[in-house]
Amino acid sequence: MATMVIVHGAFGGGWGWREVAALLRARGHDVFTPSLTGFGERAHLATPETSLETHIQDILNLLRYEDLHQVVLACQSYGGMVATGVADRMPERLAHLVYLNALVPEDGQSVFDLTPPAFRQRCEEAARRAGEGWRIPVPAFEDDPRIAAFARGRYVATPLRPFTEPIRLGPAPDGVRRTYIWCTEDQEGLSGVADLMRPFAERARRDPRWRFRVLSAIPDAYIQMPGTVADLFDEAARSS
Image (cartoon, rainbow, N blue to C red; front, side, top):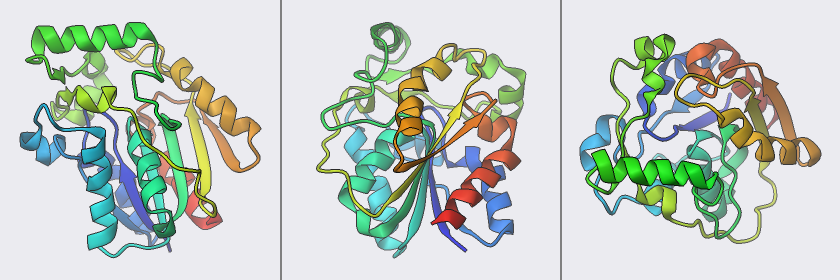
């Protein structure tokens, strides 16, 4: 079976993928769900200097020190920035990239370059008002009862710098397969995310180098339907 690494999105942590990881391990996969610096059990390490580059190095070091090869690298939301950077730096360790409603940047783009100006304004204003100027408070998506019951207050503020820092990429690596999974429903506190990811989904749909799947699910599909997400990740792993 496959070696899988799952990169979480903003505000979350590796803890959020526990159910999906358990299902994948039951199928024989070796699964890693690291928390990026400043998130989850590493929340105490967040500083104003925590950056996109910090998070890329988190995953590169996981691959290096765990000696992982032929990895299926899956990601969600902001995690797409990280996974894309890892694929640029260490493509020889990867077999497949799986983007679950995740950002797919090109060279020189930041999170804020890939999102509407109003999103940047909201984040920066929230950071000034309630995040000491350098971190974005947790949005209201925990008002969704499904997410609140699942998360139990474990979401944390996200450092602002990873959203402003542009990614630096070389030519797209050859030999790494790609899958995009587009979640088409919005959820309370995250209105507009389905449309936000539409350009990446449409690009993957048109590109024969990508596998493309659609989920009638909220962006946090791993919470709503972990079994389905595990099925899709397993399918990608087997196709590798």
